[in-house]
Amino acid sequence: MKSQWKCKWHSEFNENEFRTYSPGSEECMVILWESVEAIFLSNQTPRDGDYHNFKYTFFLNKEPEIVKNENQSWFNRIIGKILPKVKISGLPTYETDDHIQKDFKSIAPAIEKYLGITNTNQKSFLSMKFGNKVEDLKKTNNQYYTEGKSLKYFGFYKIFDWNTKLEDALLNRFREETKK
Image: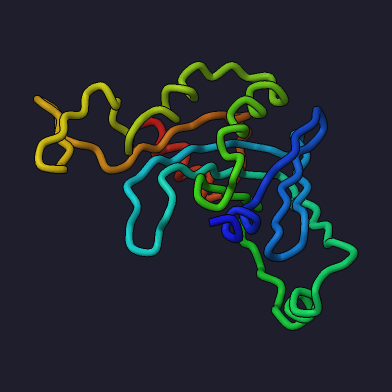
């Protein structure tokens, strides 16, 4: 557990930017708050190969800066040189979830503080269980159910959005999904 914990991402926030450190790849991603176009939160039951329940998706209007550690291991130096650069269609995105990020719960207060938004629903979204209010859930024989309502398996919420008219298919699809 200790070795897994050391490999998880962690972030630092200030008024201009936030930095996410990835110990495994020995690099840091720097994202300016002014480059954040929209933020969405998903809450879902883990599927095969997933180990997270909550995931933030940040849409950015410019590429984040990648800062490599000075003392990168030989493996990460070679991998950085031989792997091709991924071509991105549309706006750049940054995703993080509650499995890979050890300080995941610190993201919500940072969004409120540094983007100057007060989305009172964000705290309630983070306390839900797969889009269901926890107080509405009943448990029998290790199975969850709700009385009178069908059980949700996915919650998807808009946390922040400048609502800029951008021609990005994924961003526009996310915006439409959160209206439902």
